[in-house]
Amino acid sequence: MATAYAQPFPLANPVHKVEKPTFGPDLAVRLICPECKDPNPNIVEQFSSGDLVCGTCGLVLGDRVVDTRSEWRTFANDEGDDPSRVGAASDPLLEGMEQLDTTISFRDGGSGIARELQRAASRSSASRAERNLLQAFRDISSWCDQFSLPKTISDIAKQLYKRTDEEKLLRGKPSEAIIAACIFIACRQAHVPRTFREICSLTGVSKKTLGQCYKAMEQAFNLTPGASAQGGRHITTPAAARGPEDLLVRYCNHLDLPPNVQPICSDIIIKARELGIADGRSPVSIAGGAIYFTCHLLGKVKSAREISTVAGVSEGTIKLVYRLYYADREKLVKEEWIKEGKADVRRLPMDQTK
Image 1 (cartoon, rainbow, N blue to C red):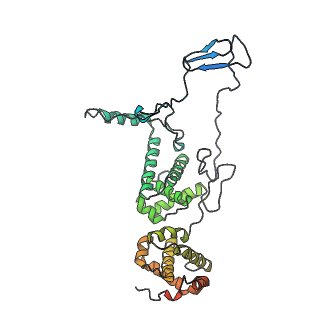
Image 2: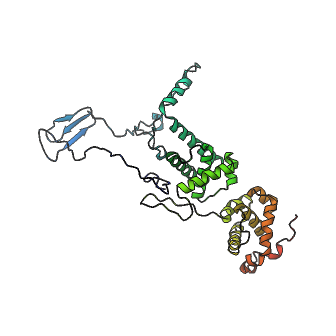
Image 3: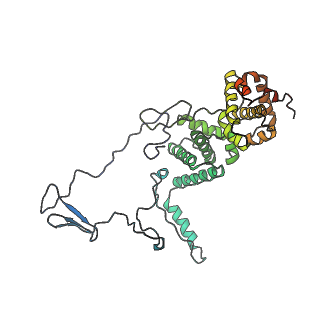
């Protein structure tokens, strides 16, 4: 992910802004000794004395030279902290913001002065927009930790939130809804999709508000399947269309099913889609019904209640999809599975009341 070299999540229809001219030092200017006047001077920096000396004639050209080198001279842990002056690594997510913090100690003898100083420092050190952005980053990290999502997804969600804040796309929407939409899109970008229901239960955001924020971001950042950014800008890989088969790995792991169940179940879902079976059903419903069908087909029986708990859909919905699959079972089950002894159509129950 080239976050440090190009702007992530470029707009689908970028607005070309007139860039202000930037000024920098003239690198063609050279320091020449006034005594030697050599076009190729031998200038020596003596950091021990803080002088800038001509190496040919010894004339001091400057004094009080600041030593910009690091001071890594920690050879043992008992010598205290590392005296290096380089500081912590810069955070690309905080680019354009002040990244040096001032920490005030809590040790004030119980007088309460430290808390007042901290409050005053927080007001003066950062603007309201920066404080809101940092708070959003903390919320994203917290919710990703609750969902056991890796740091890569948290970073993608933070990048997307920052781009949304920079472009002022969702004015008036609550920050919780924007954060929820960012996490939802980040999961899709990282190929570990989560459903709307899971994101809503995690963040407490309504499904309607989450859908509105997601649609706005999808159109603004060209996240529709098969789209890409043009004009030589950074191309963000779009989230591919997610189907029920993308949810199988997680559901099968939660149900403690053997490894051979997931690929067979995925083949059944793809074949059913080609035949138009269970069209119009949600991916979660199809995944639950397909797992129920495959478990009985392979003799690894799981009850509809167990699958319902994992998938988050009702038992009736799971059995409805199962009945649709059962009606075309001869077309969905491959002959090689039966010949190899993996599957047996006779294991599929007809009565779905149990």
